[in-house]
Length: 441
Image (cartoon, rainbow, N blue to C red; front, side, top):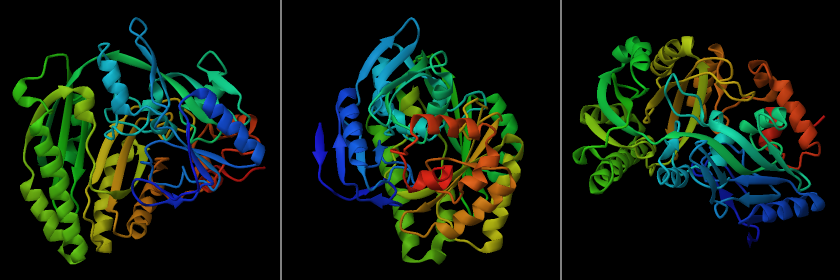
């Protein structure tokens, strides 16, 4: 176990930072238990961070901060049951590499591979595909270190109320220690990315989602163009000329996409009025790309250009109207937006604090370059999302409070009851949780 003296911690996007009393890096569950017990005895708060990719202050604390980057081992793979158990600090890409050796894969993934599995499920991270649910829905068992060091083992058969709350917990009542996931036989993805007119995509979105395993698009504000991404699951081996790995992937993902896009953002920083023209250049340079590779290598992208992000889940039936409202708002307010708007769809689930709880869902994500102010744009978008029954992604920026969130989640009180039972003293509390879940009663 490694202990760091008081130091400043900042999240990936640079949107929040904090100065904990100490940062601990445990390597075992026993060490996590000892850290939590000692902090509770001192009257300190405890928070956990993974990769720090959440844009909100969900991981901030003035107490003890636990970093799980050294707690990242695969503990068991059951090929017959198609399950995998790992320590909570393992990243999604590390997990995927381990599964590949056993001919297994995650059922679905988001597009950030360096997230830890605990951070991803705690904030309801998702991928895309109208027949696929979010990552938390793949969890079949969990162990959680509670406020005084007890370890809770939970599953659908073992303390099911706690299990459902822990599937999307916001870190509100304990430290996720181990995670058991339901997996599927390994598969490849055939991916096609191509520029399409935004109006065509909006008109055809439902049909495209139905026809394809995974469909999404990125619309570039100030243009009529979007990059459409169609991902099809296949068991066929990827042709050598279509693989994403190797030097070709480096040229495409790093040099062309990240560095070129970064140059555009820095140019926009020089003069904001250049943004519409830069967007037009981006639209003109988009081209058709086709690749096939192992599922995680297609789903996960390299992110070198830093940004702030807000993402909302809306009922699927309201998704297209919400996108049109955002387009109209950007034009009406004459906002200058240099990052694309991402649009996806996922299936409903049954997890109390999942933004996709009990409804087929469309997700809309908006971004701002990390050196630009995000609040004016995000508040306008949030007003639109409120009008469309939106629920915010827990790891992204938003301005909601417990008072505005509670009516949007039918099982809200069940979650709070679990939190009250497992962490009545709010050892795992912080300013973010007090804001979004409400103060202690």
